[in-house]
Picture (cartoon, rainbow, N blue to C red):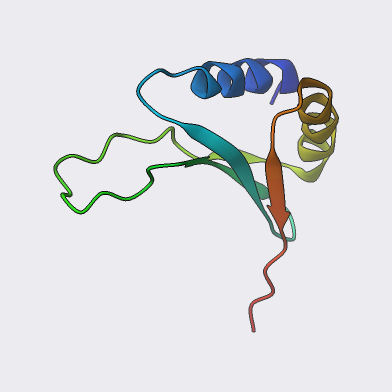
Length: 86
């Protein structure tokens, strides 16, 4: 996956007027990384009023490392998690 294309998608999502973007969350696994968008108003009591989130993105570790550099340059907040499952 091209990191510049992915960065453009992130910037577009960050600039949405109907959602308050907070950060990106990366779930790092052995062979892949799952990126999801985190919003301020993630959960609403009325399930019919929830707005559609951007779909998660899957990427390899190299793409993730390249993307982290671009995110730091653009000052886009993110969190990387490495959950260990037994």
